[in-house]
Amino acid sequence: MTSARNQSSAHGEIRLSVLGILEHRDVVLRAVSAACKLVTSEFKSPNWQEFQAHVVSAVSEAFNNLVIHGYQGRRDGRVELMIRPGPGQIQIELRDWGKGFDPNDVPIPELESLPESGLGLFIMQSFMGMKYRRGRPNLLTLSKKLGQATA
Image (cartoon, rainbow, N blue to C red):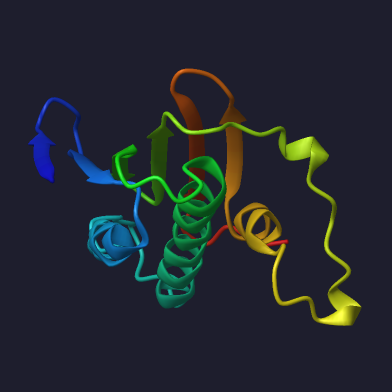
């Protein structure tokens, strides 16, 4: 596992490289949670805890999905994260070299039936702005502004 902090951007950039295994999820989520504390604002937002919870939940779902579906049980896949906290916002990029997918092919869950699985993409899109590019590497970009309404 390696980590580096790049001081070239105004608010810092946090990079993290981990194995794409569920045992490393906590390391990723702790880094993301700590990065949320670096998101600054001119005013003290009463929604900061909700902001942090949404960001951590969305990244947790993204990491779970890429481990379970992208790497499908392999233990040698890498995940590279780039976390960019800034004034009133955060952007997180996750890169992986596993099996990609088309988000448009994922069915919208039937929430009335309280499904036990299939909610990951829905949660990510509900809590944060999401962009996905399939390729080598696959690139998932999640972004959120402090005070931004959720779906």
